[in-house]
Length: 497
Image (cartoon, rainbow, N blue to C red):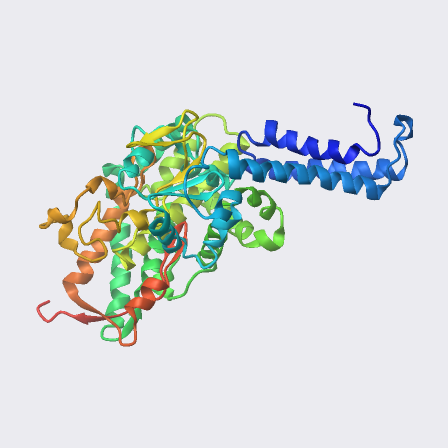
């Protein structure tokens, strides 16, 4: 076909369609979004400059900057028309039910996180559409208790999803997507949370438990916000076990700016969890990334100070730091070390404090993101296509009558004397499953058992006057880990103690 002025809009449109059909449709592009924008910016600026200088006269074409801008828009239009048509009519998830706009764009799933109430919104969708709901163009939510083992079990062929790139270039253990690299780094962490290692941590856990009890004793008979104080407790413990120093939040009764920073950034991550391609942009914009940069500076300072001062008793970071010091170190190794320090503080404090505050909720109510293998996999008689993002929402599954009798009721005896109330124990995974299960499980149990035992041994506990149980339930927020609202309780000393 002869290249003419009139054919240029069609060619520009077809170039966009072809680019999506043969390139963008395959693989993950989230981490390259910034590069793509830079390339398109270069093309746009270069094309406009070429048109402005009239450098195409040798081809017989004359393009004004306005005409080039028009062709650029035709190209982008071609990409989006092809993408939307493919997602709606040809995508491998086209036969799965779900909201119409969820089929077209991940912005739909993002709207579910606006109020940080995504677990509740997803549960409503499953009630409407069934066990399988297409939340995004390539994203499937599965609310089948049997899918827990299929997706998260030891033998599952799935890998971690694109969400796990949000902290790059720092890659803490929990964000490692390559299974071999994860297994290698996990061995070091396993040493840090072994039964032997826990003996070194127990005195420090006891120390902060005593500090917590002092707070409760001073406020006995008066309303006290346990959500706040349990967070202070878990944060004090993990800062000590990470960097060998005290954050003194229990003693001072004040929230540190670092904890506020962590909370703010976890909320941002939750808002954009379905738009991983946005994170490369937010990391480069100071007005969006200021809190996170402040946190990473604090982490780097703590790691540097900790590396120069060995504690008398090993802490969790001792094992990780010792491994880091062995052999040659790359810049990426240093970044990963900082990432691991971040992980110890955030994961170790958030999940424990949430569980202490709320024993009925999962610390990760939306479920963990995974990607199916290229060949796909089956859950019962249902085939799940390959290379799609899947999640099993624990908030919904833990309330499923196929797994639990009377699932909406708080009946602790279901785990002890009334085992008939648990129909499918394998659906309950508070610490995860398989190679990606919670490495700090033993330490978490130590903290939970100690705090719960000493409090219930010494005090009767009741809701404070004016504290609404409904307000507490409805005020919980999903920021990847669960964040609880204030919970005012009254602790009354037991007479027999």
